[in-house]
Image (cartoon, rainbow, N blue to C red):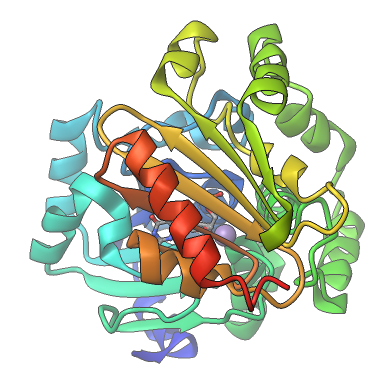
Amino acid sequence: MKPIEEIKPLLESPKKVVITMHQKPDADAMGSSLALFHYLQQKGHQTTVISPTNYPDFLKWMPGCDLVIDFESANDKALEVMKGAELLFCLDFNNIDRTKNMAPVIEKMTAIRILVDHHLEPKDQFDYGVSDNTAAATAQMIYEMLYTLGEEKYINPAMGECIYAGTLTDTGSFRFSSTSSRVHRMVADLMDRGLKHEFIHQAIYDNFLENRLRFLGNSLLNRMEVFYECNTAMIAIPYSDLRKFDLQTGDTEGIVNFLLSIQGIKLAALIIDRNVEVKLSFRSKGDFDVNTFARRYFDGGGHFNAAGGRSGDPLDKTIQRFIDAMHANEDLLQ
Ligand code: 5GP
Ligand code: MN
């Protein structure tokens, strides 16, 4: 993979550009993609953002989100745009498989592939790019990329909002160890450029329906188990709960973090039966590496303290596999 600086000549004449992100995008995937979109639009490129799947309502306030194409619901349109693309930006994922049904189409595209991502162990699938696991968010990397390219004059308020949103959520509201002085300096710079932050917190965190809060209550009361011998807490959600509380995409985000608020807990797991497959989310405090854990046991990956995976087994069997994996790591969890 050639360094990101070398894309500069590619951006000097108008190009057809597609930006994509991981499936079920979160605020960082969407925020980094839209920030890059606003920059490329200003540069005169014909740019389209394609999401592999749908995404939560609490991202829809982001400037430009109304122009994003959902690969699943607007498939014909997405395929046509992808066919003509000269450049493909891949944001906030390290493996093309993370784009779900888009992956086989991406494999066939002739566009130059450019990676901007902060996950561990990127695959060797990209022509140009930057992979930086010390970055708190891909959105932060887009901001830094513009400085690297000498293009920081293009950072406008709309981009500031997208970059702030991605960084806000990926740092757990500026609390995880990834929240470096680089992050705080970036936020200060964005504020100097006119960023208003308060409404972004409200749009992301204070924007759910009543049923989501009742679902959270039910999950904590009835679906949580604590394994003190392994300093681990788990919530396992049957598919019937998702239906009963009429949960929408994004409603389960953040719930895994509540488990880490229990004194002494080092490993938190949220296991959700999504009917076709079971999805697992892991979080850890301190020196337990959930990226390795997710890779080894659940065909996943992510970051040192936040990762995810999946299982093709039914929920009960997946829970048992998780408990076995936890016990196999008992020493590391002490
Ligand atoms: P979450 O638990 O919030 O879905 O994801 C936590 C982190 O792990 C995110 O950075 C996400 O990109 C990554 N992640 C989640 N699920 C998977 C997966 O199935 N495979 C891989 N490689 N990474 C995942
Ligand atoms: Mn991210």
